Image (cartoon, rainbow, N blue to C red; front, side):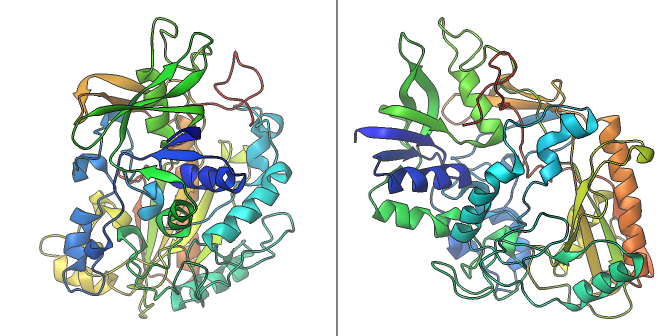
Length: 484
């Protein structure tokens, strides 16, 4: 098929882009190295669900080791990257938290003297936020006091569960911000989505079809409109003409045969690890350091949003084995920089359930250091199951050039293509930031009546947010792509 546009990756970036291009009448081809998700493995109604979910819906490709995955060397990283190689990409397994950037996120150089301002503003992106929220079926409540006034999500939030009401009342007493949290979870039938049944299984394959993952919200419609979506297509490199422009991509199919897809425009939407990996793999005599790398920044300034948790234990049954997961309420009370705290920027808090019996034993949400295996097992289960509420703390980290994605010298994927290696170390700023926010989250849960709190200061396998690595800017000497 002749293509006006070639998109690499059928995750959220590829889906949103393909939808807009198709609406403009362009001929679009999409190459995706994974398959369509197999929701027959999403067995939320089965007694063995918690046992099988960790195998069938593992977020870490090094654990899954499927044919369509590529391994990631994370030996020199404090956080393991989690991603999903399939139609839908990371939206298949994300928790469906739906957080816009804050207005201040776009102006950190101006406000805090760090990093760089974006070449775009919150106001520039606001109409696009609204459009995408309509496409994904976001649930929430208009009027969040942490944001500028604007249009609310298209769907109402779910009713506040007991844990949400308890913590919300505590924040009212403390004078701290809270709001019914936005989620990519349908609270009533909406377009291609069904109504959520609140099983708290969002990250392990939403069998109900209520989560806004693009394999449900975008790709079926786009395929019906004529977009060609090629699955099990592992892209090995981009082809460049003598003028330095990309003309298409070479890829291997499931049988190992090599193909070339030509296109007038090529768009790489392969996440913050896969995208720089492909640009580096496309090095040639014409571009010895990789494509789009005249600045030397391809792969650099990796950010991963360090994640910790504080779980409160309560006497009453909070019903925290179920609900949206997802976030029930969120708080941005301490998001903005306050120099007196000894660090810059802040963190987003999301109040989440803690899951079923097996979840009481896992590193997420409890932290590997807080295991209850052994003599304390039965007492630990009784204290935790249904009687716990968790604040997930998503920290803003800074773009450090030493945190980066490179090509591993030895590790390869199933097609013999060099795998990525990530270097990521938490900065002193990130450590101080997390320490402060974990302490405040503990105060929050204690104010809500928790008789004990369990803190996991950093959970390793939570690298959901793969950011940076292809910096956007207006100066080609200091950025990889421009604002458009």
